[in-house]
Image 1 (spheres, one colour):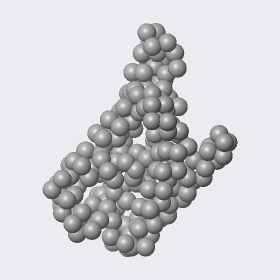
Image 2 (spheres, helix red, strand yellow):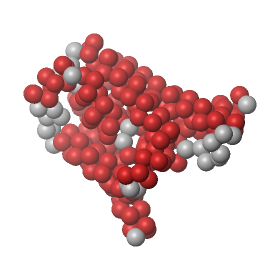
Image 3 (cartoon, one colour):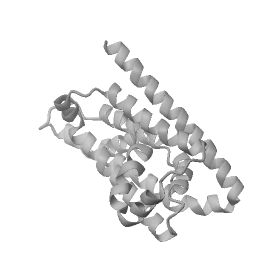
Image 4 (tube, one colour):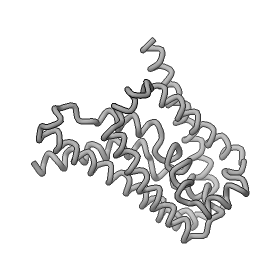
Amino acid sequence: MIHSLVNDAALVFFALFPVLNPPAMSPIFLEMTSSLPDEDRHRLAGLIGRYTFMMLFVVLVAGGWLLKIFGISVPVIRVAGGLLLFNTAWKMLNNEPKFSREEQAELKEKMSSRAFFPMTMPVTAGPGSIAVTLTLIPAGPLLSSSTWLSFFGNSAGIALAALSVFLFYRYSENLLRRLGKAGAQTISKISAFILLAIGVQIIWEGIRGLLAAG
């Protein structure tokens, strides 16, 4: 039983970690929160890690039913989320402010709301991680012990992935600051370009899914 639980947790973690990609996203997080003092940024990193777990856990529990109720398909989520990611990355590549002055003030005063959108969804846990989580929903009978065991293992894997987001967001600033302003900006631009490419890839996968379904 323990062996199966650990295997499920590891499988989910290694499925989500490359999609969440906290090493590449941490420079983007630092740039988007550059107006915040360190204490607030650390608190925000904790909130994003918590919201990442909560959102993906809700997707694991009720994602399939919610999509059926609202008549939304996974390809549609990918297209919509990919567009949001593309917009965020495009602004970063063109040195546009990530938040206006009013939004920066709101980020300081209403950190909890901004921590979820856009910092958690779609920047950190976007349509890619949602789509991956939807594929991990246990398919066995609801009252089966093996289904519940798989569910707990998957939940543990989501928790580990969310923890990795928090750790990278919280502690990678020390490494980036040692690189200096030019080095950190270079990494930030490369990360923004990768985010742009991820957005395009997610949009394309969504369009392919819609065309295949049609």
